[in-house]
Structure formats: C-alpha cells, structure tokens
Length: 85
Image: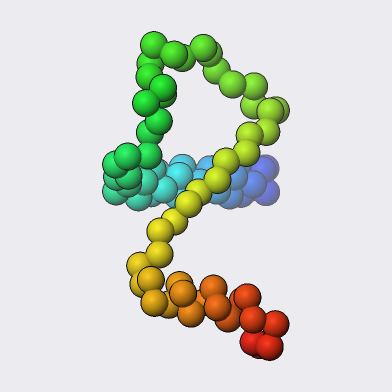
C-alpha cells in the first residue's frame, strides 16, 4: 500500500510542477507587445471565416530591415565576389 501512496504522491508532485511551470510561461508571455504596422488592412473581425484546420500548413515570410547600410553594402559586395572567402 505504501508504494501506491508513493506513486500517487510523485504523480501529484509532477502534475503540480507542470502547472506551476505552465503558469510561469503564461506570466512571461504577458510582457509581449504588438509590433505596429504588421497587421494587414484586410485582417478584420468582419472578415473572420472560422477556425483554421489544425492539420493545414501555411507559409509566411518575415522581412527585417538593415540597421547599417555601409555594412549591408560591404556584405553584398563580399558575397558577390567569387574571390571573397
């Protein structure tokens, strides 16, 4: 009987740990903020057609701007030059 109690206690502790870790993840995600200008104008509640199929795949691209134009130009020259390592 004591090994059953021990297994139940261990299982309960693991479930409690999982819940605590899950709650800390939710708390950390509350620090997120929206990136302005990233929502297309057609993405409105009135255009909502329903939940997507969870088995479908989607593709998307993310474009990031360069902070240093001089470094960008140097990089472009380097990758375009066959003699560049």
